[in-house]
Amino acid sequence: MTLTSSDLRGVTVATVLPFDDAGAIDWRGYENLIAYCSGSATAIFVNGHAGEATSLSEAERSEVIRRTRALIGKDKPLLAGVIPHGVDDAIAQARAAQAAGADCYVVFPPAALGGGAAATDAPRAFFEAVTAAVNIPASVFQFPLASGFGYSTRVLAAIAALPRVIAVKEGSNMMLAYEENFRALRAAAPDVAMLPSNYDWFLPQLAVGADGLLSGLASLTPHWLADLWTAAEAFDLAAMRKASDRLHPAVRAIYGPAPIIDMHTRIKVGLKALGVIANARPRLPLIPASAEAETLVRAAIEESGLRR
Image 1 (cartoon, rainbow, N blue to C red):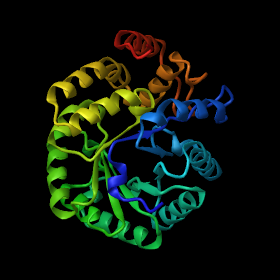
Image 2: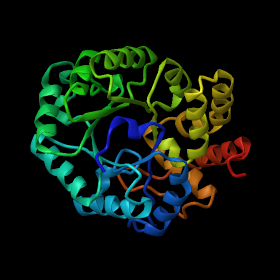
Image 3: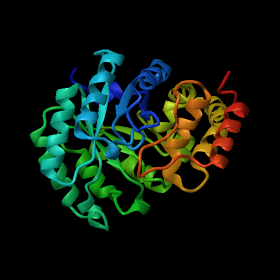
């Protein structure tokens, strides 16, 4: 399929990836996860932060894409993360993703653009070179501004205006930045999908405007995020608040405690508690969630009624 921004209108699930005790990918658990979340999903995003892509080999990343495509069929959009060191690496990863069955690649900022370079014209030049060499659509992964890798509004709008860019995964982690970016994209690239991904801000982000949601939380609460999106599409503030209130205990249990890098491991804890996967362990350099975090997540699942 030739993916367009309108194909991403809804909930895109950024999938976690279960492993066994030895650190091998648990494919049976992954099949269970896809079965659990894909029914509520407009699209699936693999090999991102949630999927621990930096711990995977090239062969494993391609295998994740191939297996996901087989599980979801040919008609549901499949996005794949590209976490590059430079232009040649980004092109190679994007082409490999396409060959494995991805419809779109989601480009993380390369390390060289940290420390303030993301505010220069270098990111646009980087994306221009990559997208010119790959013939499936691209999406931009906007990092939190505090990380030093988030693009300025001017630069993000310039990237979005490139011909083969169809979406922005918006993770600035500031409501002011989100609204500025949303307005700038509507002016510079109105056909590019704005996909909020900051778990703490879904309600206000959708109130400002969006074209869908993209989140690792959708691995755990896909149907609830779909309810939130449906309410937003209907401009029903009361239903949006109700959906947000239902999500709140899980959101705070997953994303509230430090360190935030454990967020996707906590999602796995929740999925294990629900019986979707058998093992919540991540791969190094991540380590298992603490006993306190596990208790908090399980309690939030019970409180919220997710198990039911």
